[in-house]
Amino acid sequence: MQIEDIIAGLSPTCYRRPDVYEVSYSMSAPALTPTSPDADTTAPNTRRWDFLLDIFAMNSFSWAVAIPIELVLAGMGWKEHLKVRLMALVFNTLIARPFSVYRSWVVNRFGGGGVVNAYLVDTFVFLSFQFPLYLCNMRLGGASWDEVATASITFILIAGSLGRPYGIYLDWVRRVWINNVSSLWSKRAS
Image 1 (cartoon, helix red, strand yellow):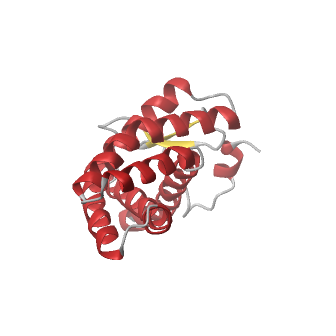
Image 2 (cartoon, rainbow, N blue to C red):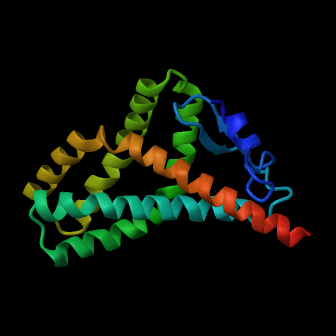
């Protein structure tokens, strides 16, 4: 089933904003990416919503993944974990949109080979962008070098299982938001 068939089957109150988003066919599951920085001609505050959605997706995913890594595998205490996570909240808020733009750029250039390609591209994007930031965050949060080494090795080992799920999660958050908010915009315009 093609994405056009899915979109065509949606009710009038649940549709995609073609003037703001395009569907990228380069991933195994279609990725929603902003078409251009000035594409928000008819939708109010579209760029702000993109920013907020990216922040929400990045922080919620990061916290869910960090709990077992930092508390269980790295052996950090709750106080140290909370300090690191609060710093990560600041970092993730600052880097969420640049990460999403970087991911879209890489997907548009190197995606397009099916499920394996989507996995490899999302894994590369996740590792190349997130790993250096994770190292800095751990050190600034007060983690010892042993804890940083353990958490980093773990992060690298499981990055293969994090990159693609985060890509799918980010696309899902955008899709749910676009489908629900589009109906509110159309009702508001009426």
